[in-house]
Length: 332
Ligand SMILES: [Zn+2]
Image (cartoon, rainbow, N blue to C red):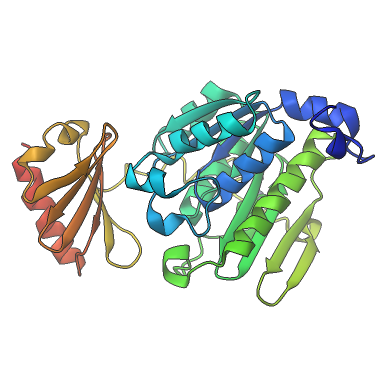
């Protein structure tokens, strides 16, 4: 029996769409809550050409809402994309999963997409500035993409093609409310619902019907779903999909210190910091070939191979600047 028989029996999908799904080159950006669920659904359904890019490792606090990962992955501090590749191998051996452990930036996103040459991109990110970057890169490179977001109990999904309306049209500017999973929390069912709608839009795409042209918003706690016809959302003055101006792609280089959610900061050092981590104050409590976990008094530092460092336990930006200066002196 064909393993995909049940989905192929659905008349509007059928054998042709199944063949198309297997041949479609799909890039998932982010292997967190949305990305991991999307990857699992697609692997089970028989999408054979998957690429997934993410820069993080599996942590215990991810497990309540992210698919496939387990306590062993968190204990071993495995990069999400490699943990995912291992799990998916056992779910469907036909999937060729291209796992990329890398940060996405304004400077590399076009190269990443150009190298993979996806037919479609799926959003599994959790930051709006990243989504605006995807919006611009996909518009510039003429690649359709599916936007998905989940915060608190609310979710949004929208399939975007070259003609728009694009993400900039519907959101206009980067929301400044600071809404994020880390601050507002997130209920796991909304993640699965958003991931499911993203995959539904992808199924419409591979079946040749095209995106639904609806902006879907849902609330997993109020138990409500709404679909807005997107034609009314097109901005005729949109800098991206009308004027081909790409502000996010042309942004200045990432700062050395970035404030993340709560008491977390992101420091950026040169790549050699990873090799010289033993010169940092504190002690290396755990390490593998991708990441080193350093304790220094009440401060916890996770240093990645590319020189990024997540720092937790610093109360103010001034504390962060002092700590950054202290650390950078150690590896000069
Ligand atoms: Zn637009």
